[in-house]
Image 1: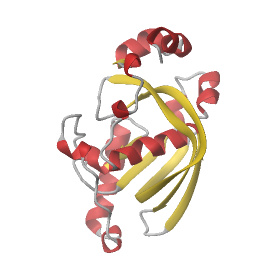
Image 2: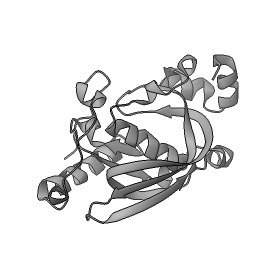
Image 3: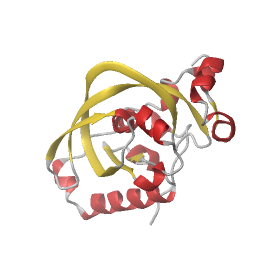
Length: 194
């Protein structure tokens, strides 16, 4: 059953989520939460969803960038973003490490700031140490858009939204972005000072 996605202004989005205890990971409750979050993510649709976005202050997020989401983007746009499909990934108690100082700036949105987008600088390469849904430790090396998604979701676990990192003059409605700027992002960044 899909969960309600809370919107900016809900206190849970501004609190640091608590770590998930090892004994909680295999629990039916947490496994059901993961399944419900996945259903919610796919229904939205989105590429990432953190537990605080569904009202739960837990260090838990899921990521899935499905190939079908890429159909409306040109190959040049996908290549510029370093965007490739990412299979379902569950991250619990993640620790983010910046692996390269280089940052890339692209428009970014959020299911908890529905209807808006802005240019957000993000590191181009990161490492994340975390636990998966089976309680196994893992190390994720990510570049490009996958690195962006990881940073965005881990920000949620630390009480941050993309609006805390955005280039303020680029903030716009999603409708304006799609109708006017999606095919001309460089021009939008130049005009709005991104």
